[in-house]
Image (cartoon, rainbow, N blue to C red; front, side, top):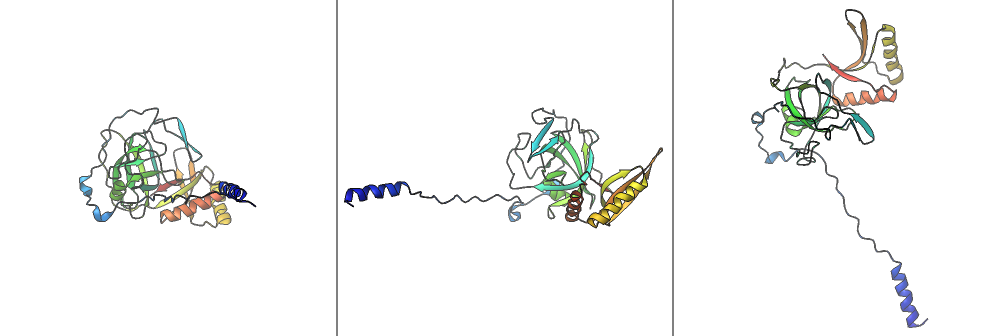
Length: 267
């Protein structure tokens, strides 16, 4: 083989060789709290959000929207809204990033995210474990976790007392201009239950309770009778529940037997 052919063969081999560049290292940002050694927080100097009238823009409040393949229906009004469930919080990962309203998220402001309330709305959030209450402004969407009803700012979570655990049982109630007073309650913890059904016939409630025991070995349930002027209701409730971890485990068991429409209640 002459020198010319050797040269052409070398060029051909080089042209077929793929030189791989080193893959770019992608580090996923983890949410959390700021460096506490650098913080000097004056909690008493951070007041609750003050409810005020603000327009509800259709662009911020569509009839419905989809996130992670799930559809959410935005409520037409926040009047009379009240719900109990699990709160979480979000911090450094989203700090200074845009919220649904277009304003920057400030983890040191009294704000929160909600999946279905009109934006902006104002809500009173009460920790069911210690009865501490705060008022926050809903200016973002979330949390897109199946078993969470509100995502608080970092500072709101601190004031409510759930920043260490990351989650907590709460009651969320819509408030309006002039309703700035925050009831502090008796500082007595409430017991939390998951209600999974309400029946007009006690026999049907008993059947559901027996199904829980036989199919998912869930025996910590009760039937709560409620009598009104014209009828009696038999409510099947699981609990009392000691922690958010236990609530998640129970919810997962209920979902495994196609029980998905549940609600938290406390007493």
